[in-house]
Image 1 (spheres, rainbow, N blue to C red):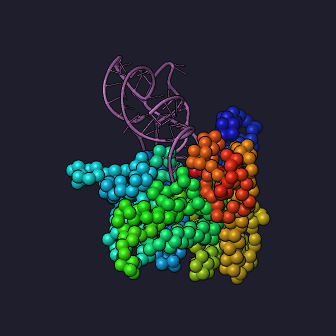
Image 2: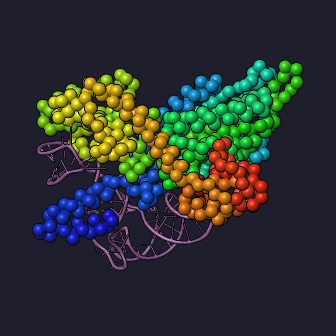
Image 3: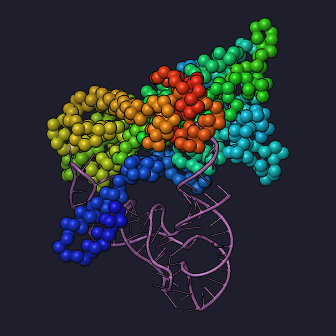
Length: 510
RNA sequence: CGGGGCGUGGCGCAGCCCGGUAGCGCGCACGGUUUGGGUCCGUGAGGUCCCCGGUUCGAAUCCGGGCGCCCCGACCA
């Protein structure tokens, strides 16, 4: 298509009588260069273009890393704020542990080493000398925190210990994509210690609920809660729980995980407490994490062919005001109105931005902010000034039908209503999309067909690890989770035909 | 680690086959014009042509070596 447009332009060079054709050709070409690749054409290309063109991220000089630009970082800050508030409300406190972990720590929990050693970055030299013991750049902090916990916890009176840290971690991945998988990423990792298995289990599930509540209500991403299979379990955990979300290309994205670590780390790091009866007992610990991957989830859940669509709760700008004017006289009258409305919204706590760029046409700005996903656009021009009106346009409903003409007097209320509407409609859209692409299957052929078509399959499962791997080799899909709410009756195992013990959700995943 | 491709102003590319000292689009700066759905015109700034070596009067272009990146297959929040 671009090739065609280019050749048309070339042919028209110097040709007489084809002026309008040339202009049309040029305009088409310019449009195609400005437009984003369609999702249906190439989803991962769409994703990359959006991430870079909406200024979420920039390429980094280091292999698998990215620079998170201010617009992208503000989305992350919104995520942090939403989670941190929920963590605090449930009694957790923030702390910070070192980036560097003695290599010997990582080795103390057998499964943990095995799980992480392939992707560790290790510092062997520092201060111009070789270190006596290499330092691992943390891939996660169970080990250092476990060591600290063993010091801090003496008696049952010290429990539960509820700690969270906001940090960067490094996992040396081979294939990386901005936000979804990078060598370094930002996240929070919660670490708690409890007196009993049941308390630890309750904490693990509580934190999963918090992730789900955040995903649904703040990020407008419907998620399915469930337990991970043994193969997908965190290295060193008793049980791993997950929230799974469906992206716009129907691939699954694990968007947050919560682990009941049992007494594995307590035993490896000697985290013990004295009971009321003066007995030494090992603690039961948990850990749970959610990362900058969530930014990618927001992009891939809500984005469309025009670009980002941000849920108002997380949008850096909830409203962008585009002033429209010709003459200087118009300009000052328009800007007068704009400034008053900006203040009105700002005072109400709405994140509002005025696009004062000169030399960019309003039409350009409309498209630009649509690409960046701003939920609501307010246009104010001479006609509006005359009538004390304004135009509101919603990002989730493009074109004429998403526009409304309001009075400036009712602007605040109209904007608040609209923001709430958009938040809800993004969630509804995503939920409808997801539900339309999950199918219950009762035979393996059916499962294979559904996966091949790109959808998710829900099936009864009673297979072994080896069976699960065989299904993965055969179809490319993995068990994303055993959902808490299976939504259907158990039959025979879809793969082995034996008695099934749980319902499993199969999908291709990121 | 196996297979494929690419390194040329900030970005995307042409030029290379057939050597003659670099060009286009976008972006950027300035001036004007325009502005209710991706304005247009003019002027201008900006390049170790990935690196090292060789051939040659002369290398982005030919030859040798190296480095880096991207895409596709085995692991992962």
